[in-house]
Image 1 (cartoon, helix red, strand yellow):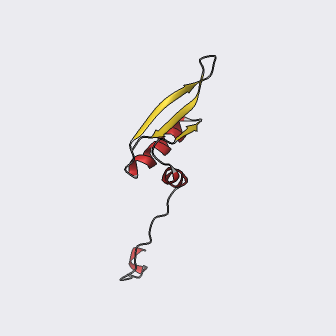
Image 2: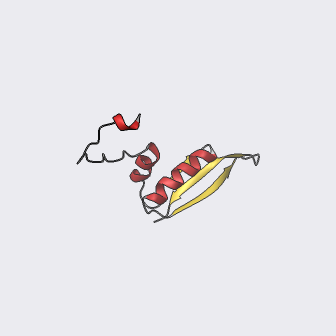
Image 3: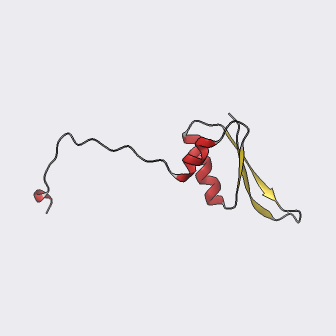
Length: 77
């Protein structure tokens, strides 16, 4: 039952850790880019970069035969 849980006061909220995508984005400088293989990676890295206040540009990368092989993500500002 909920009534048995003790109430605690003045317990500080721990800082959130940074995820692998945010760590990667923090190492990037203006003009750097990363090639990722999946749309999930593209979305995660782009979101991490945007959350850090970076301007981002992404483009799909194609093989010589015209098949998509991934996405390149640039930090533009």
